[in-house]
Length: 185
Image (cartoon, rainbow, N blue to C red):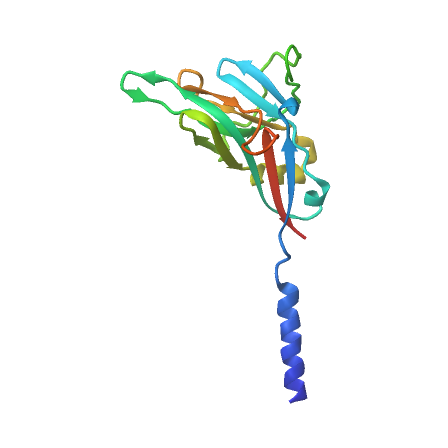
């Protein structure tokens, strides 16, 4: 009997030690003063630097969600209304965006990877809160830190379809962009 009890205790310890670690989170808030912009033929792109917290790099990354609010206007053509697609794209090379009134940045548009799953249509209106899942992008940055040149928030549909303007604060807060990292140890 003592042998059976010992086997049950050993099995319980094995199951308990294999249980997943409790999820933790790290939240990074980015104020509008730290968001760059670039105005080009496709409208305004918002450029932000995003440093992955060390506590996230040192652990298993479960998911990353980028949250921001935009004002969206749509252009209409006759009886149809087009809807702009808002996306979050990784910048693929060094880029200096202008920040604030009269600030100077690079003249060229940021180079970014335009084919990523983190884009979606946005309906016309003010303060449309969007949440974009960017886990794949951040995992690539963790695997190869030199590829982290930041992110672009913008629309590839261009002003003939509609435009977006990034709000300077999310509802109930002072950050223009909030990034939530979920990870486990």
